[in-house]
Length: 335
Ligand code: TXA
Ligand code: MG
Image (cartoon, rainbow, N blue to C red; front, side, top):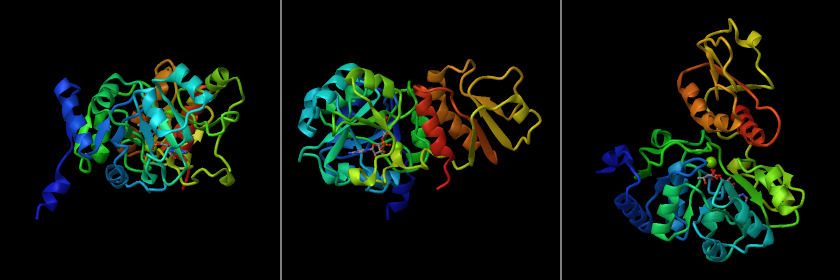
């Protein structure tokens, strides 16, 4: 009887006032979902110790349960309750937490299979966003949160993006402004501390991790026998994808787009001297951090502008470019 009004009900967006933080931490304790800001992308949070609430995350996102969630914490003691840390984890936490780094460690029994997709490991992140940290502290709960987008689509970097994708599927969105980093966290697998592996590149680079740990850091998709899930979105080839086809190029020159078909968009890193209406750029001066911050919002707006195709330029060099290019490649991958 009430089904229709329930499906049509839109999420409420909350400013980060103390009263709203108190209200939302109670909602989390009741098992409700809350979209939360982090410095990387917005997450869709639930009490990580409540399997039913965690199950609701998968349903709201349309995400297969074979895809494990990241658990967010505000204090090291919470990590110790959830996982078995090692020396490498301690060093990385000291260097980069709170921040855009997620560590994969052996899990403890308290973490339900729904969170880890049945894996014996758990992904943990201490995020650095002040408002999110206030909510984590107020609730006292570890919060499981994947990115707050429909499965497979571009991750949200504003509360408006969250509402566009999940507005009819979740009750609460905490608005913490635009995400400062704009790309999902670096995920580092520390189960074997002498052979750390970056499973997903992000703002904390492989070079930075290697410097802190003093060992070589592997990268890329692990082999099946290493026991990691093969169906994990951050590891899936096609992910973070707009509906419009994306075509990549090492470098886009003015001769590529000058006089080009106006139904196709060109996405450059830097502003060209004399742009055309179908030419866009991530940052006027090509600053990589600004480019990373702008990327997902730009892909979303080009996607809704109705272009037939988006030609995108890859970022040069390593470091943050690795993360930007990883997301561009996934956006461009076919199937
Ligand atoms: O920046 C971020 O990491 C954001 C914010 C909200 O924290 N979260 C995020 O979550 O990007 P999500 O679910 O979209 O991506 C999490 C990735 C998935 O690719 C998943 O496979 C991987 O983390 N993951 C989770 N647990 C894992 C585990 N035990 N072993 C290997 N990978 C794991
Ligand atoms: Mg995601």
